[in-house]
Length: 168
Ligand SMILES: [Zn+2]
Image 1 (tube, rainbow, N blue to C red):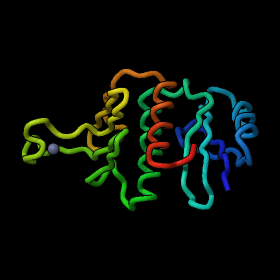
Image 2: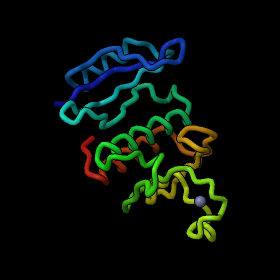
Image 3: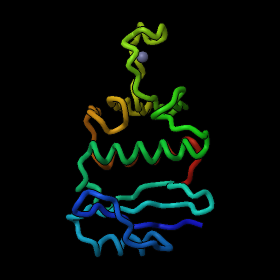
């Protein structure tokens, strides 16, 4: 059973739920009623698995690109966690397949013999487009993503989700 939950960020920067909808059309309509200044978006939940399976921020261009990437990577990490039992942004071995990889922040400074030559692994890497993101300690902090547009990153997210067998 899929549910579309419209959320927004309120005046004190807290995430609030606005409405739960049975389909995407109704959710988009509800989100459009909220107005752009409070940054509405839609989480898609699979209630059987009680996990978020996708993010559709209809006004996503309002959201700062770093914030947007953080939301996306957290969503992806949550999906991986629900399958593997650990969060790949926090615990090694992280996650890697043919399409993308996620690794926790490493501060070994080359002391780990495996990191000596090539440096610590990049925290998020999308192979097909050679797109990478680094962060400090936890996802979202002091992030320095390669330059990217919202549309492109949404595409990357969907491809990553597909690559480990989640429906959009
Ligand atoms: Zn390292």
